[in-house]
Length: 603
Image (tube, helix red, strand yellow):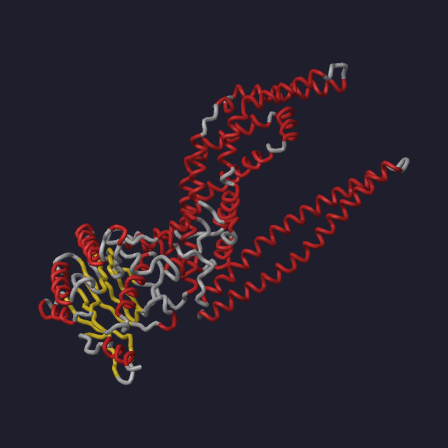
């Protein structure tokens, strides 16, 4: 399915949902009118009952009006819920259509995940406006956002389990790609600030809940027997006071004792629980909706199945906690609280219910949030793959050495404007890439890096064919000074190169991507330093691509032809500059800086 037809499909779904939304909103007006009419009718017949003689029939009609009001109100609430759900789903489809138009504004760009010291994230535009994260992100929770960021930055590297990890994640993603409607319902849960899940707040609230010191008396069989006996005793004395000469003071005092006993023994514990529960209202409702989606879906991929199994245990626990929080909310009704404690010792049973929930579920809570976050990230990855049917699955080679073979490799950010290039590089080889300014060197380097990141998170790549092994990745393309720390540009470069060397020593089989080594010094010093650096790197178990304007570096191919190979992005100079953006073997012959400067000066 091409991008245009995908966009049309998204817009068609959004249009259908908009029609349903309009119909539901139209119904809403009738429900409101029905509520008002039935309520007024009830009041009218109650008034007639007080003014007419022998008008018992008016009370029955008033009762019928009350029942009708309650039924209409319940239908209205369900209708409002449907309006909210369909509205969010409609927005999700519209946002995907905007994505295909190149508008990523509905999604968080992940700038808060950026780390200038990361081995490759800054150079490859992993985070920030129009970044890879910005294009991928459909997460509905802060935990899902963190899991997605972790997937993009903590690649499996050259480890024994790397290939299995990548293929397991790919299997999980591929299963979710086909679950188009399910994914859109999942994504829709995050539309609207009220439904965004703050995973960190959830986890912190649970940590607070585990720290609450609640007396364990409520769980003892003796306390349960005493509570039940007290409730039964009250009702027995109340019935006896009604049907026998027994004084009414006895059940009244019994109820008063029940109330004060419940308040004295339970109010402090419930106050502490309520303080923690106030942090969970919105998050719990959204969590229950998401977990319900996960558990209701048929999932077979190993990673998805494991998440679903964990979530099946979580669903009941989250619902129980939601009910406990609802009961805590109802305690704010003072009159209701008095009757509930006096007649049923409700606070005692609420404390007992929370203690049982705490014992059964609290130790699993972090794992449940982690699994929910993992599924959240997988949905984002699957949606990206669905939106890019032109991308292909890379072949992951099971070899301990560096291997990167790609045909017609394209930068995923450039869409149809991307020019494809080939790359064939293996263990110990370095490509020295020369070319004029704006000829495509830096874009090609980022293209190589970004497609490798996509492959390692289980996504397809933007190429006609790709065969790669699993290796470590390090880049140095965007070194910046830091005047606040007294670090000059040149010093920052040295720090980054030192970080690279240490990284390669600690992580054998590292693929490095460098753009202009030692830009912060003079030409001769730069050349000599660059030669020394590359000669040193060639002795390490690493490979890579180095873009440079120093044509003299191309002589390294003559010195060590098995290690270094020259490639270039050539341009043509005529009345204007012609850029092919094609990489070819050899050394660039034409440069454009002087040519373009002359055009400016002669303008």
